[in-house]
Image (cartoon, one colour):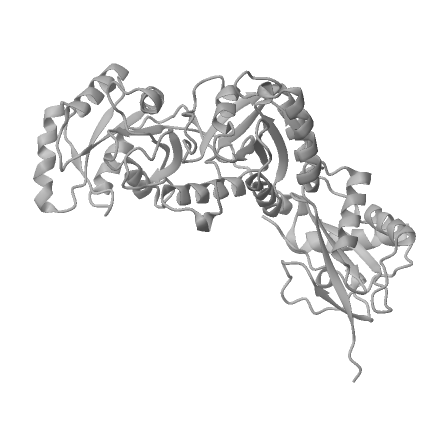
Amino acid sequence: MKHWLDLASLTPELVGQGGDYRCECVKNNAGVTDDIEPSVNADLADLDELAAAARAAAEEEFGDLEELLLDEIESDVLLPSVAVVGRPNVGKSTLVNRIIGRREAVVEDVPGVTRDRVSYPAIWNGRDFLLVDTGGWQRDARGMAGQIAAQAERAITMADVVMFVVDATVGALDADAAVVSVLRRAGVPVILVANKVDDNRTESDATALWSLGLGEPYPVSALHGRGSGDLLDAVVDALPEIGTTRSKAGGPRRIALLGRPNVGKSSLLNQLAEESRVVVDAVAGTTVDPVDELIVLGGQQWWFVDTAGIRRRVKEASGHEYYASLRTRAALEKAEVAVVVIDADEPISEQDIRILSLVIESGRALVIAYNKWDLLDEDRRHYLEREIDRDLHMVAWAPRVNISARTGRHMEKLVPALDAALTGWETRIPTSQLNTFLASIVASHPHPLRGGRQSRILFGTQVSTRPPTFVLFATGFLEAGYRRFIERRLREDYGFAGTPIQVNVRIREKRRSR
């Protein structure tokens, strides 16, 4: 939640008589018509008074500025969980989307799209709970299918209630009977869901599911929503009063793992969680849905989010890859720090640079993790350093960690890098100190002449953090090179490690003579 403060409208002390200001930044303040002209020759005392007056007026109108600049953090609660299990392509993800009321889980007609267990917050009749979507369970599965089945069985053991979804149009199969045996061993309350009952003619097909021995089947249509209300009433009645699963809202810091497919993001999450939390396979694009996991690292708790590998631009993707890219972008927007995983054993690609640019544009803190460091020889390390200097110079401010997700090498170095990035992301410079800094820059390195005129910086203020955003009031246009120079000097003097910096300019326009 970001608030852009109009200093001219907040305090009369900032209102001058000399001109207007036009905003060059992307995010404009609509309705800014007052004139602003701070004194260039003001001493430190005047600047302190100016900053204090602006802040007092802002807090009088908006309340506590610190609360406005920081996102709301909800209190942690333990919620009951409901696992949705069944054979592949019976409509589990479609039912999950129907219950939560939005297209969150990736759905496609091809079986096996969902592979990991992914939880979503849901509510029905005032009861909050977590809905856990799982991949299709298959008997005697091997390879990736075996890992998917293991994740589904893990979700069953951790759930408070299980929704067993069966395709009513084909009836009970031997694979469904095998799932029933797994459910009975778990000893978890089970609600039988007869899906794909789209009309009254197919409702009689649901009665054949009594043979599974799980009680009354609930005929529903996940695609159209038919019968979903009765199903959810039964689910809520079976839920315990107090759950065992922690809510994902608020609490620890959120870290998003981004990168190209097959660079080791899922292996890194499994290494940090010290268990097989997500499916890992040599086939690129194994992860589809973002997977959240609460991890204790360095004595702190973190929400780590494994995301799907970004193979190409969203508009160039198709099928489930398109929806996976959208989910990855949404996970990035919810995160505070993005850990971009790069395969150190391969040359840095254009896609790596594009992903880094995506993180910078989103305004999130950044940490670069060079994975598969155990596979590097001396020659490759030499060439890697040259590639970093040549291709990644624009993110030289980002903390760098050399790790191996397979062996667990240097996992402990992630914590100092994350702390440094978050510290830089939330750094604020007092207005008086900032203007002293700007005055020294203007005195030693003035803006170059353009067209016989020289632009001057009159006043500057940091309007927000997360990321640090500065607004400079100037007499004319500040070129991009000069803005980069100011940004570089800000990093040299104040750090700002691991965070992008936004420098916006408002230009004073001369009054038109009447």
